[in-house]
Image (cartoon, rainbow, N blue to C red; front, side):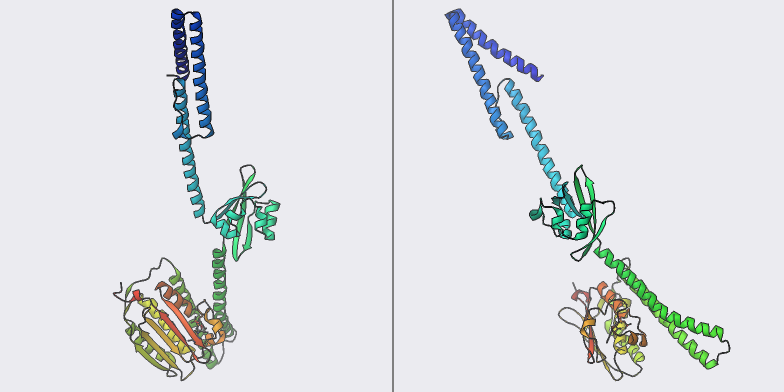
Length: 432
Ligand code: ADP
């Protein structure tokens, strides 16, 4: 039934009852009694309505659907409609709160920083990434001007000048950030911060690598070109001189080939598509072969010893052979004649380990942490003399990362070096 009709019917019923009672009173006890009864009835009706209004006003002051007053007549309809409205409102509010919580959660998971500022650049809200990027603390800084919180001149200029079409590149707290302000609503702004420190570092590494590789290839190429030019300009060159030129060109060609092979190996090791093979590796057998090769390289100039006391492990035999052989070759190349080179394969509490110890030229402390960088050499000319590409230890590092192993280096200048490859216990065949 329509609410207006309910209201009028219930009002009419009540007034009719009062008038009927007054009519009965007047009939039996006279007109005055009838009038008094009608008056009393009307006053009671007004007092009851007032009481309902009072209850309603109390409830409106402190709305709580559980405490909604009971009603009678048209009030039943009013209260039940208010109850429905209130329940709907509560549902909307809880949905809104839930949505807001989900939105906040999503904002905290964003990889970028987000700051919401009002029209005069006061901080209204920011996500934890923005706190980290800009050194903010929402609890402490809310309501403060952002330019007072991030006091870098470029940032202040960018915010104040308002030329937001181009993002700002900002160096802040050891990080490189791209900062972008986007006006939204009519007088609010969103500031987005994107951290490019890592991608810049990788870009820089790539640039360095290309520069170094080109430099490394340019030297042998220049030598080869020089000899070819001489050969073309002096066709009657003495046979012995020509033979020595060819020998030098072959050497430079081999150097370039080693370099390209090492670069290809490195790029293969770094590629995530290239999975580590897990096969059983007979390390003692592998080390015997490596020792024979080292003997050949040393050509009788060094003394070797081999201690084999460790287990077989699992991993990629090719990669481990290349890492171990790089370490042993280095020991031969950086140990003067009559030096001693020890190869040890043993077990330890942390897991099996391979040690190459020499009593060669050694390395001073400041170089040790950088030895595994590509093309890093302590002494450039010595490395070239000994046919080094500068990539050997970088290859070792990548192979070990792929096998969860670590390279530990101890060295003293003019005393010798100790390179230790520490494998985890789980590398041992049959380890759980
Ligand atoms: P390279 O091809 O120049 O030997 P590596 O990456 O193999 O390149 O080694 C980097 C540098 O570490 C070498 O140039 C050398 O200075 C130093 N180095 C490596 N092994 C030894 C060692 N056993 N004794 C002394 N220096 C070493």
